[in-house]
Image (cartoon, rainbow over all chains, first blue to last red; front, side):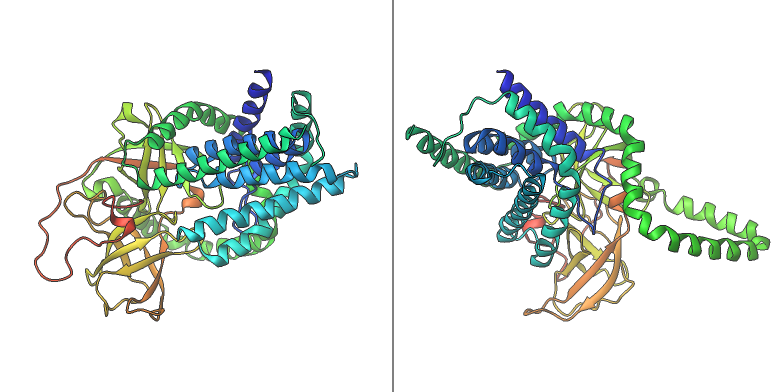
Length: 166
Length: 299
């Protein structure tokens, strides 16, 4: 229960920050995606199941709050959380650069995947999807040093999932 | 030990299936479906917190905005100095400018212009997504706000209400790619559909092929029976007219009047004037298309 509450608080805090404090922050017309950094941190701390579950709920809350289409972010964050959870057993280096790179790649994949789904639904353009991926990843890299360690530490403290080799 | 990866895969499959189901249900459901009710609950829960955080963190948000604008400040400074010089030269015509300013202010009073009854609201939060353009406002059902009501600001149309709680509402902005607005050109009265272009300009799709569109044409809302928007609200101005891409319809880019990136105070149209009788003749039917299904903007 403590774990659920702690991770729900992370989702609430990230969504609130995104929609208020960071709402005016734009780089080349795009905004940072704090939630995907949080998903990466939780997946790195707790593994694929927790990463996928956290990603699903984070995406669903964001979709419900930020208007339609509901479910797209949930789909993408679930996949990102699971994938990062799988990859974490291979990340043995304690270097911060490795974690930064992981957050950057996850952000890029997340934006491009979201854009791909929305393009299939005819709700976005190829040019915007292609351009926004690297820019969002760059924004997220700027925020990762402040967000990632805090969320990861919290997720590790309330972790229930043991590390398994696949 | 071997059960764990399998369990994880099963959970992943369930979550992915749930996500796809939610997307499907959201696309197909009516205005009062389960996803819409969930949306209302979410807005109701987060609305007060967003308002509080916005009020406390406005200076911090301003700092971030300032950070992104540092590169342009020097250029702005030079431009503003030139502007001050120009204004000093025009000091003698100050009274004329003041009168003009008052006239412009009067012209910008959208609610009075369209004969609508409106409720004022402040934007308390914006969408955090790069693919969704919406804002949360601090006016809800208690003030008479309901789903599908038009939202305007001093410049023109802003969007449409898509979710309402007692004290808050979510507004889908005009620029969201899922939005569609029945509109017409002010000059020729040619009807069409304005579609959101995300971070790009809006697109105007004339109902009839061969419609003459010129750069600088004003696009206004087109009202019809059962429609969302009052007649004649300014939507934007045509900034580019391109050749038809693979079809008969021209590619028309429209720059919205409302600056959706800097929205602060808006008004919700809670009562609009009666719809004028539709003119007879071809091409006068309400535009058809996904964006027009919900009688205005959005799905």
